Image 1: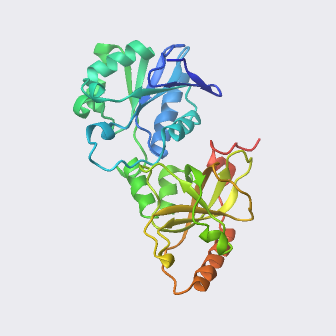
Image 2 (image 1 turned 90 degrees about the horizontal axis):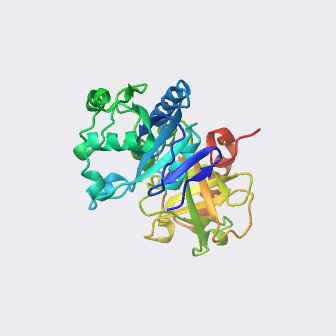
Image 3 (image 1 turned 60 degrees about the vertical axis):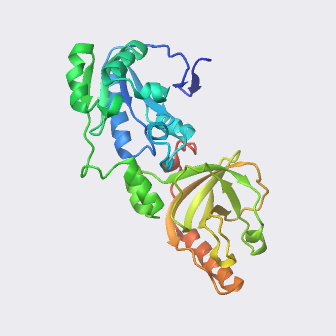
Length: 330
């Protein structure tokens, strides 16, 4: 396949691209779903180790598709971030290179030692940085203890990293649980930023426009974790626009209209433009209320007006928190 793409100064090698080492590497391996604070600590440590080495390079290796999709295909496919979002978030962490390795049944049968040997050969591995729950290789046999034991034999240095707080409190699983429960504040505490989702605006039934609240129906990957049904305050960035707009976000089935289809709808405050077919990145900042069935359309509109007032009063996240999807101020 073609060589790496270049995200600024960060080189990105997707799946079968041929990696070209540019020095000895400090490597960390993970799924990085959601890119939470623990992932950030791991990547910061990787960058620090690389900076201490002569011609050192910090490399993040991630696997795609997610291993559970291949190993347990009957289970629900639930993720916080697409591969493209994961790469964008990794690129903002300070690493020099991002390597996406294709995960399949053959890959899953490799021992931890074989996988580490491959990293030595392909990436010029000098140092492997791992978190407390690292588990690589067949049957997740490559725990931090195993990785440390193999280091002298294979010729790399192992650097373990511990996360702050109670064990398990900062994890992708906890972040997914917080999002699906509508616990926006807990989700932000785990991620260290507002969570966002990206999808294409598709045509709906036009109900919102008829009520005076035109909404963008956003089509998202079916395996992306949605917030709990309810109404949220947020902001949204339309493809091609330099600034995000304040937004009301509705997740659910429109119970007032007896609909059964679960939708992700976004009303952009102070915005009136046709954006069908464009991409929309939506940031979730605050929970407002549960979805409910109103006795009349008038009661629903009155509630939506209160929602809009509440959303206007929310202290929305700044550009720095929304990076890398919104450029940081100069």
